[in-house]
Image (cartoon, rainbow, N blue to C red; front, side):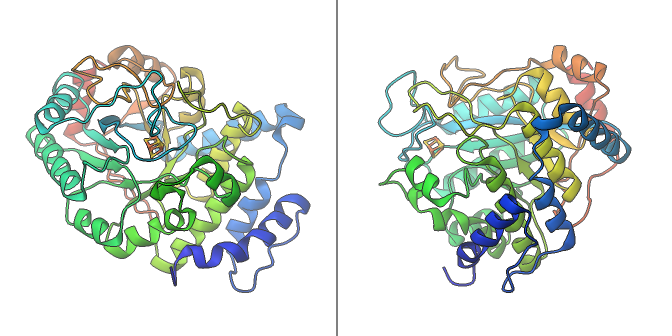
Length: 398
Ligand code: SF4
Protein backbone atom coordinates (compact mmCIF):
# COMPACT_ATOMS: atom_id res chain seq x y z
CA UNK A 1 0.00 0.00 0.00
CA UNK A 2 1.60 3.21 -1.15
CA UNK A 3 2.47 5.80 1.43
CA UNK A 4 1.99 3.58 4.44
CA UNK A 5 4.37 2.06 6.98
CA UNK A 6 4.89 -1.12 4.95
CA UNK A 7 6.64 1.03 2.34
CA UNK A 8 9.34 1.88 4.88
CA UNK A 9 9.56 -1.46 6.64
CA UNK A 10 12.13 -3.11 4.33
CA UNK A 11 14.50 -0.15 4.52
CA UNK A 12 14.40 -0.10 8.32
CA UNK A 13 15.45 -3.68 8.93
CA UNK A 14 19.17 -3.54 8.19
CA UNK A 15 19.97 -0.33 10.10
CA UNK A 16 17.87 -1.59 12.98
CA UNK A 17 19.60 -4.97 13.13
CA UNK A 18 22.99 -3.22 12.92
CA UNK A 19 22.06 -0.94 15.78
CA UNK A 20 20.78 -3.80 17.94
CA UNK A 21 23.72 -6.11 17.20
CA UNK A 22 26.64 -3.69 17.08
CA UNK A 23 25.35 -0.46 18.55
CA UNK A 24 25.91 1.16 15.14
CA UNK A 25 24.39 4.68 15.05
CA UNK A 26 21.10 4.86 13.19
CA UNK A 27 21.82 5.18 9.48
CA UNK A 28 18.78 5.36 7.24
CA UNK A 29 18.70 8.63 5.23
CA UNK A 30 15.11 7.96 4.11
CA UNK A 31 13.95 7.60 7.69
CA UNK A 32 15.70 9.91 10.15
CA UNK A 33 14.71 9.36 13.78
CA UNK A 34 14.68 11.61 16.81
CA UNK A 35 17.54 11.46 19.34
CA UNK A 36 15.01 10.15 21.89
CA UNK A 37 14.03 7.24 19.67
CA UNK A 38 17.66 6.40 18.97
CA UNK A 39 18.40 6.48 22.70
CA UNK A 40 15.46 4.14 23.37
CA UNK A 41 16.64 1.74 20.66
CA UNK A 42 20.12 1.68 22.12
CA UNK A 43 18.74 1.15 25.60
CA UNK A 44 16.99 -1.99 24.38
CA UNK A 45 20.41 -3.51 23.64
CA UNK A 46 21.32 -3.75 27.29
CA UNK A 47 21.54 -7.33 28.56
CA UNK A 48 19.78 -6.76 31.87
CA UNK A 49 20.30 -10.38 32.91
CA UNK A 50 24.06 -9.76 33.06
CA UNK A 51 23.66 -7.31 35.95
CA UNK A 52 20.32 -7.90 37.61
CA UNK A 53 21.08 -5.69 40.63
CA UNK A 54 21.77 -2.70 38.37
CA UNK A 55 18.67 -3.51 36.34
CA UNK A 56 16.51 -3.52 39.49
CA UNK A 57 17.89 -0.09 40.42
CA UNK A 58 16.96 1.18 36.94
CA UNK A 59 13.44 -0.23 37.30
CA UNK A 60 13.05 1.21 40.80
CA UNK A 61 13.98 4.69 39.53
CA UNK A 62 11.63 4.32 36.55
CA UNK A 63 8.80 3.50 39.00
CA UNK A 64 9.71 6.57 41.08
CA UNK A 65 9.45 8.72 37.94
CA UNK A 66 6.02 7.25 37.22
CA UNK A 67 4.92 7.86 40.80
CA UNK A 68 5.87 11.50 40.46
CA UNK A 69 3.93 11.80 37.23
CA UNK A 70 0.89 9.64 37.99
CA UNK A 71 0.73 9.41 41.82
CA UNK A 72 0.14 5.70 41.61
CA UNK A 73 -3.07 6.03 39.61
CA UNK A 74 -4.16 3.00 37.53
CA UNK A 75 -7.19 2.64 35.28
CA UNK A 76 -9.26 -0.56 35.36
CA UNK A 77 -10.39 -2.00 32.04
CA UNK A 78 -12.43 -5.16 31.74
CA UNK A 79 -12.46 -7.27 28.57
CA UNK A 80 -15.78 -8.48 27.18
CA UNK A 81 -15.36 -11.11 24.51
CA UNK A 82 -18.14 -11.05 21.94
CA UNK A 83 -17.09 -14.08 19.86
CA UNK A 84 -14.63 -16.96 19.88
CA UNK A 85 -15.51 -18.10 16.34
CA UNK A 86 -12.46 -17.45 14.19
CA UNK A 87 -11.33 -17.98 10.62
CA UNK A 88 -7.67 -17.33 11.41
CA UNK A 89 -5.04 -19.93 12.28
CA UNK A 90 -2.68 -18.17 14.71
CA UNK A 91 -0.66 -21.11 16.01
CA UNK A 92 -0.45 -19.80 19.58
CA UNK A 93 -4.19 -19.30 20.10
CA UNK A 94 -6.91 -21.59 21.41
CA UNK A 95 -9.48 -19.96 19.13
CA UNK A 96 -7.58 -20.75 15.95
CA UNK A 97 -9.61 -22.21 13.14
CA UNK A 98 -9.91 -25.99 13.28
CA UNK A 99 -8.81 -26.35 16.91
CA UNK A 100 -11.03 -28.68 18.91
CA UNK A 101 -9.05 -28.91 22.13
CA UNK A 102 -10.48 -27.07 25.11
CA UNK A 103 -12.41 -24.61 22.98
CA UNK A 104 -15.95 -23.35 23.17
CA UNK A 105 -17.19 -21.55 20.08
CA UNK A 106 -19.56 -18.84 21.17
CA UNK A 107 -20.94 -15.73 19.51
CA UNK A 108 -22.99 -13.57 21.85
CA UNK A 109 -26.29 -12.15 20.70
CA UNK A 110 -27.19 -8.59 21.64
CA UNK A 111 -29.14 -9.68 24.71
CA UNK A 112 -26.29 -11.86 25.97
CA UNK A 113 -23.73 -9.13 25.39
CA UNK A 114 -25.98 -6.72 27.24
CA UNK A 115 -26.12 -9.10 30.22
CA UNK A 116 -22.34 -9.37 30.35
CA UNK A 117 -21.88 -5.60 30.19
CA UNK A 118 -24.66 -4.97 32.70
CA UNK A 119 -23.05 -7.35 35.18
CA UNK A 120 -19.63 -5.75 34.82
CA UNK A 121 -20.98 -2.21 35.14
CA UNK A 122 -23.61 -2.71 37.83
CA UNK A 123 -22.24 -5.56 39.90
CA UNK A 124 -18.50 -5.10 39.45
CA UNK A 125 -18.46 -1.32 39.00
CA UNK A 126 -16.37 -1.14 35.82
CA UNK A 127 -16.52 1.98 33.68
CA UNK A 128 -14.10 1.04 30.89
CA UNK A 129 -15.32 -1.84 28.73
CA UNK A 130 -13.01 -3.37 26.14
CA UNK A 131 -15.01 -5.24 23.49
CA UNK A 132 -12.89 -8.09 22.10
CA UNK A 133 -13.49 -10.02 18.88
CA UNK A 134 -11.96 -13.00 17.13
CA UNK A 135 -12.05 -12.84 13.32
CA UNK A 136 -15.64 -13.97 13.00
CA UNK A 137 -17.25 -13.65 9.55
CA UNK A 138 -20.59 -13.45 11.32
CA UNK A 139 -19.66 -10.16 12.99
CA UNK A 140 -19.49 -7.12 10.71
CA UNK A 141 -18.15 -3.64 11.38
CA UNK A 142 -21.81 -2.56 11.59
CA UNK A 143 -22.37 -5.15 14.33
CA UNK A 144 -19.33 -3.87 16.22
CA UNK A 145 -20.61 -0.30 15.89
CA UNK A 146 -23.93 -1.44 17.32
CA UNK A 147 -22.14 -3.12 20.25
CA UNK A 148 -20.20 0.10 20.89
CA UNK A 149 -23.43 2.06 20.99
CA UNK A 150 -24.96 -0.52 23.35
CA UNK A 151 -22.01 -0.36 25.75
CA UNK A 152 -21.90 3.43 25.52
CA UNK A 153 -25.60 3.69 26.30
CA UNK A 154 -25.23 1.39 29.32
CA UNK A 155 -22.18 3.29 30.58
CA UNK A 156 -24.04 6.58 30.20
CA UNK A 157 -26.81 5.18 32.36
CA UNK A 158 -24.23 4.48 35.04
CA UNK A 159 -22.72 7.96 34.95
CA UNK A 160 -20.41 7.59 31.97
CA UNK A 161 -17.39 5.62 30.91
CA UNK A 162 -15.33 4.46 27.98
CA UNK A 163 -15.78 1.73 25.38
CA UNK A 164 -12.67 0.37 23.69
CA UNK A 165 -12.21 -2.12 20.88
CA UNK A 166 -9.79 -4.96 20.24
CA UNK A 167 -10.49 -7.04 17.16
CA UNK A 168 -9.31 -7.99 13.70
CA UNK A 169 -7.59 -5.56 11.38
CA UNK A 170 -10.19 -3.81 9.23
CA UNK A 171 -10.35 -1.82 6.01
CA UNK A 172 -10.15 1.95 6.03
CA UNK A 173 -13.86 2.10 5.20
CA UNK A 174 -14.71 -0.13 8.15
CA UNK A 175 -12.55 1.98 10.46
CA UNK A 176 -14.28 5.09 9.11
CA UNK A 177 -17.60 3.62 10.10
CA UNK A 178 -16.27 2.98 13.61
CA UNK A 179 -14.68 6.42 13.82
CA UNK A 180 -18.22 7.83 13.91
CA UNK A 181 -18.84 6.03 17.22
CA UNK A 182 -17.80 7.09 20.69
CA UNK A 183 -14.75 4.84 21.14
CA UNK A 184 -12.04 5.42 23.72
CA UNK A 185 -9.38 3.59 21.75
CA UNK A 186 -9.00 0.92 19.10
CA UNK A 187 -6.30 -1.63 19.87
CA UNK A 188 -4.54 -4.03 17.52
CA UNK A 189 -1.41 -5.97 18.37
CA UNK A 190 1.10 -6.48 15.59
CA UNK A 191 2.06 -9.80 17.25
CA UNK A 192 5.60 -9.71 15.78
CA UNK A 193 7.48 -7.43 13.38
CA UNK A 194 9.64 -10.34 12.17
CA UNK A 195 8.02 -10.99 8.80
CA UNK A 196 9.28 -14.53 8.38
CA UNK A 197 8.20 -15.58 11.88
CA UNK A 198 4.91 -13.75 11.39
CA UNK A 199 4.09 -15.74 8.25
CA UNK A 200 4.99 -19.04 9.95
CA UNK A 201 2.82 -18.29 12.95
CA UNK A 202 -0.15 -17.04 10.93
CA UNK A 203 -0.60 -19.56 8.12
CA UNK A 204 -3.05 -18.97 5.26
CA UNK A 205 -5.82 -18.83 4.27
CA UNK A 206 -6.86 -16.09 6.72
CA UNK A 207 -6.33 -12.39 6.04
CA UNK A 208 -4.05 -12.20 9.03
CA UNK A 209 -1.39 -14.06 7.04
CA UNK A 210 -0.93 -10.80 5.11
CA UNK A 211 1.86 -9.23 7.18
CA UNK A 212 1.85 -5.98 5.19
CA UNK A 213 -1.88 -5.54 5.58
CA UNK A 214 -1.51 -5.76 9.35
CA UNK A 215 1.47 -3.39 9.37
CA UNK A 216 -0.67 -0.78 7.68
CA UNK A 217 -3.70 -1.14 9.94
CA UNK A 218 -2.67 1.88 12.02
CA UNK A 219 -2.34 4.05 8.91
CA UNK A 220 -5.86 2.98 8.00
CA UNK A 221 -7.18 3.77 11.48
CA UNK A 222 -5.63 7.21 11.61
CA UNK A 223 -6.65 8.08 8.05
CA UNK A 224 -10.18 6.99 8.89
CA UNK A 225 -10.31 9.42 11.81
CA UNK A 226 -9.73 7.09 14.76
CA UNK A 227 -7.52 9.22 16.95
CA UNK A 228 -6.67 6.94 19.86
CA UNK A 229 -4.95 3.73 18.98
CA UNK A 230 -3.42 0.89 20.95
CA UNK A 231 -0.27 -0.75 19.61
CA UNK A 232 1.97 -3.53 20.86
CA UNK A 233 3.65 -6.85 20.19
CA UNK A 234 3.03 -10.29 21.64
CA UNK A 235 6.38 -10.76 23.33
CA UNK A 236 7.65 -14.30 22.88
CA UNK A 237 6.92 -14.97 19.21
CA UNK A 238 10.31 -13.78 17.92
CA UNK A 239 13.36 -11.84 19.10
CA UNK A 240 11.70 -9.53 21.59
CA UNK A 241 14.35 -6.79 21.25
CA UNK A 242 13.77 -6.56 17.51
CA UNK A 243 10.00 -6.52 18.01
CA UNK A 244 10.06 -3.76 20.61
CA UNK A 245 12.60 -1.76 18.59
CA UNK A 246 10.57 -1.96 15.37
CA UNK A 247 7.49 -0.96 17.38
CA UNK A 248 9.32 2.21 18.42
CA UNK A 249 10.16 2.95 14.79
CA UNK A 250 6.56 2.33 13.80
CA UNK A 251 5.46 4.83 16.45
CA UNK A 252 8.03 7.33 15.21
CA UNK A 253 6.61 6.93 11.71
CA UNK A 254 3.01 7.49 12.88
CA UNK A 255 4.00 10.47 14.99
CA UNK A 256 5.74 12.10 12.06
CA UNK A 257 3.04 11.24 9.52
CA UNK A 258 -0.11 11.86 11.53
CA UNK A 259 1.10 13.87 14.50
CA UNK A 260 0.17 11.16 16.97
CA UNK A 261 1.29 7.79 18.21
CA UNK A 262 -0.40 5.22 20.40
CA UNK A 263 -2.39 6.16 23.48
CA UNK A 264 -2.20 2.58 24.73
CA UNK A 265 0.69 0.13 24.74
CA UNK A 266 -0.37 -3.51 24.58
CA UNK A 267 2.02 -5.69 26.56
CA UNK A 268 0.78 -9.25 26.06
CA UNK A 269 3.46 -11.87 26.70
CA UNK A 270 3.09 -15.33 25.24
CA UNK A 271 1.36 -17.85 27.50
CA UNK A 272 0.32 -21.42 26.77
CA UNK A 273 -3.11 -22.07 25.30
CA UNK A 274 -4.89 -25.42 24.99
CA UNK A 275 -4.61 -26.80 21.49
CA UNK A 276 -1.92 -24.29 20.54
CA UNK A 277 1.51 -25.03 19.16
CA UNK A 278 4.15 -24.73 21.83
CA UNK A 279 6.53 -21.89 21.05
CA UNK A 280 9.73 -21.61 23.06
CA UNK A 281 13.03 -19.78 22.95
CA UNK A 282 11.85 -16.21 22.42
CA UNK A 283 10.00 -15.18 25.56
CA UNK A 284 11.71 -12.40 27.51
CA UNK A 285 12.39 -13.09 31.19
CA UNK A 286 10.36 -11.15 33.74
CA UNK A 287 13.26 -8.75 34.14
CA UNK A 288 13.70 -8.23 30.39
CA UNK A 289 9.97 -7.78 29.98
CA UNK A 290 9.73 -5.18 32.77
CA UNK A 291 12.74 -3.42 31.29
CA UNK A 292 11.22 -3.24 27.81
CA UNK A 293 8.00 -1.77 29.23
CA UNK A 294 9.96 0.74 31.35
CA UNK A 295 12.01 1.85 28.35
CA UNK A 296 8.84 2.45 26.40
CA UNK A 297 7.31 4.46 29.25
CA UNK A 298 10.41 6.60 29.46
CA UNK A 299 10.31 7.17 25.72
CA UNK A 300 6.57 7.82 25.52
CA UNK A 301 5.23 8.63 29.00
CA UNK A 302 1.76 9.61 27.76
CA UNK A 303 1.18 6.14 26.31
CA UNK A 304 -0.30 3.85 28.96
CA UNK A 305 0.77 0.22 29.16
CA UNK A 306 -2.11 -2.21 29.41
CA UNK A 307 -1.16 -4.42 32.36
CA UNK A 308 -3.06 -7.66 31.95
CA UNK A 309 -3.93 -10.90 33.67
CA UNK A 310 -1.68 -13.04 31.51
CA UNK A 311 0.85 -12.20 34.21
CA UNK A 312 0.67 -13.16 37.86
CA UNK A 313 -0.22 -10.64 40.53
CA UNK A 314 3.32 -9.98 41.62
CA UNK A 315 4.49 -9.10 38.12
CA UNK A 316 1.37 -6.99 37.52
CA UNK A 317 2.27 -4.99 40.64
CA UNK A 318 5.83 -4.54 39.39
CA UNK A 319 4.61 -3.37 35.99
CA UNK A 320 2.04 -1.00 37.48
CA UNK A 321 4.32 0.40 40.17
CA UNK A 322 4.03 4.19 40.24
CA UNK A 323 0.83 4.13 38.13
CA UNK A 324 0.13 5.48 34.66
CA UNK A 325 -1.28 2.27 33.21
CA UNK A 326 -4.47 0.48 32.29
CA UNK A 327 -5.09 -2.54 34.49
CA UNK A 328 -7.21 -5.67 34.24
CA UNK A 329 -8.66 -7.18 37.40
CA UNK A 330 -11.58 -9.42 36.51
CA UNK A 331 -10.92 -11.23 33.27
CA UNK A 332 -12.71 -13.84 31.23
CA UNK A 333 -11.55 -14.48 27.68
CA UNK A 334 -14.54 -16.60 26.67
CA UNK A 335 -17.73 -14.89 25.45
CA UNK A 336 -20.34 -15.22 28.19
CA UNK A 337 -17.70 -16.10 30.77
CA UNK A 338 -18.99 -13.64 33.37
CA UNK A 339 -22.70 -14.39 33.43
CA UNK A 340 -23.44 -17.44 31.29
CA UNK A 341 -20.94 -19.87 32.76
CA UNK A 342 -19.19 -20.47 29.46
CA UNK A 343 -15.81 -21.97 30.14
CA UNK A 344 -12.60 -21.93 28.15
CA UNK A 345 -10.07 -19.31 27.33
CA UNK A 346 -8.16 -17.84 24.44
CA UNK A 347 -4.92 -18.33 26.40
CA UNK A 348 -3.95 -18.82 30.01
CA UNK A 349 -4.87 -15.85 32.19
CA UNK A 350 -5.63 -15.01 35.81
CA UNK A 351 -8.83 -13.47 37.15
CA UNK A 352 -8.17 -10.97 39.93
CA UNK A 353 -11.52 -10.71 41.66
CA UNK A 354 -12.91 -7.27 42.54
CA UNK A 355 -12.54 -5.82 46.05
CA UNK A 356 -9.98 -8.34 47.18
CA UNK A 357 -7.41 -7.42 44.57
CA UNK A 358 -8.26 -3.74 44.59
CA UNK A 359 -7.35 -3.71 48.25
CA UNK A 360 -4.16 -5.59 47.43
CA UNK A 361 -3.35 -2.99 44.76
CA UNK A 362 -3.99 -0.21 47.31
CA UNK A 363 -1.56 -1.89 49.70
CA UNK A 364 1.03 -1.63 46.91
CA UNK A 365 0.39 2.12 46.73
CA UNK A 366 -1.84 2.04 43.65
CA UNK A 367 -5.01 4.12 43.39
CA UNK A 368 -7.88 3.14 41.16
CA UNK A 369 -8.75 6.07 38.93
CA UNK A 370 -11.49 7.06 36.55
CA UNK A 371 -12.19 8.46 34.10
CA UNK A 372 -9.25 7.85 31.88
CA UNK A 373 -9.58 10.02 28.79
CA UNK A 374 -7.13 8.01 26.80
CA UNK A 375 -4.27 10.41 26.20
CA UNK A 376 -3.64 11.09 22.57
CA UNK A 377 -0.17 9.81 22.09
CA UNK A 378 0.97 13.32 21.44
CA UNK A 379 0.24 14.95 24.74
CA UNK A 380 -1.01 14.08 28.16
CA UNK A 381 -4.76 14.25 28.53
CA UNK A 382 -5.65 12.34 31.62
CA UNK A 383 -7.99 14.25 33.87
CA UNK A 384 -8.13 14.89 37.54
CA UNK A 385 -10.32 12.64 39.64
CA UNK A 386 -14.03 13.41 39.40
CA UNK A 387 -17.06 12.16 41.29
CA UNK A 388 -17.00 9.12 39.06
CA UNK A 389 -13.79 8.07 40.79
CA UNK A 390 -15.71 7.83 44.02
CA UNK A 391 -18.42 5.78 42.35
CA UNK A 392 -15.89 3.23 41.26
CA UNK A 393 -14.14 3.13 44.59
CA UNK A 394 -17.48 2.61 46.28
CA UNK A 395 -18.63 -0.21 44.10
CA UNK A 396 -15.39 -2.07 44.55
CA UNK A 397 -15.03 -1.43 48.21
CA UNK A 398 -11.57 0.00 47.95
S1 SF4 B 1 -5.28 -14.56 17.91
FE1 SF4 B 1 -7.23 -13.69 17.27
S2 SF4 B 1 -7.27 -13.93 15.07
FE2 SF4 B 1 -5.71 -15.35 15.83
S3 SF4 B 1 -6.78 -17.30 16.09
FE3 SF4 B 1 -6.85 -16.20 18.05
S4 SF4 B 1 -8.80 -15.10 18.03
FE4 SF4 B 1 -8.34 -15.72 15.93
